[in-house]
Image (cartoon, rainbow, N blue to C red; front, side, top):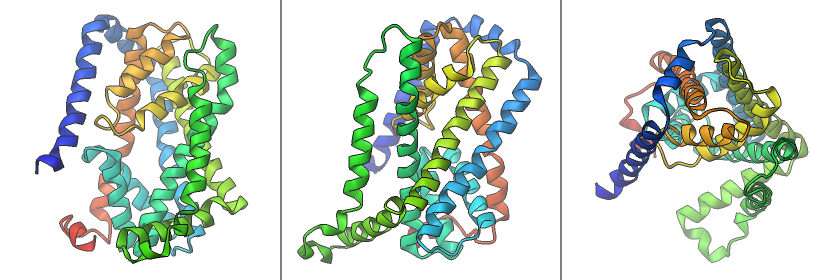
Length: 317
């Protein structure tokens, strides 16, 4: 039990600790004044743009499912993906939402290996697309800033990402003597599916393109929110600064990215002259929009034909 709950306790402690530090070092009165002056019309526009994130993610996942010959229609993929978004809020990390997506994909008719591998490979493609977007925008960021600290980090991550995908596609070359182990058989199947996803130019191009579109869409949400809060940043600033924030937030070290996202936003937007209280207000409202646009996934879950008591997830595994 201790081993099971210790990681969650650590995430909760980090989230609370980061927020405590920010609250002690950021002028909350200024942040509140910034939030109170928000343009409600532009906030509504940001909500609409954020809502588009769900179908974008569903199409990205469906691209991988199709590559693996999975018989899951796009409307059903959208429903299952939305359920996963909801459980990203309800469970301690996005990994929980992915597990729910695997389970519902299995209940919707996918083979177990397809349900599991399609979600894993979609996640890999999403992160790789994010890294590629960060690399593409780094020259813009370097022009904007006199000195970019740690400029080598993102090219290194790009190289590691490409090497990681290459290694992933070759895991079935592990010694034949190891193939008797269940975990190794899973890796062999994952490697074969990874080749179908990343070594087919059409599938890889389509999946990575949708990954990049999703991250650009998130940057657009932040840009619209910044305008709503009367923060003077441009669209290029958001395209350059938001992807690294997303990349840092994907680290599974806090609860749904809270705390880590706020600290990263304050640091990133500080480079272009945004005061910490304004960046904090921007980040918290962005997080709130993510929550609001994910909540309807709970209604989809309640109405889902495949819904069974969640205890069955253990039996299915």
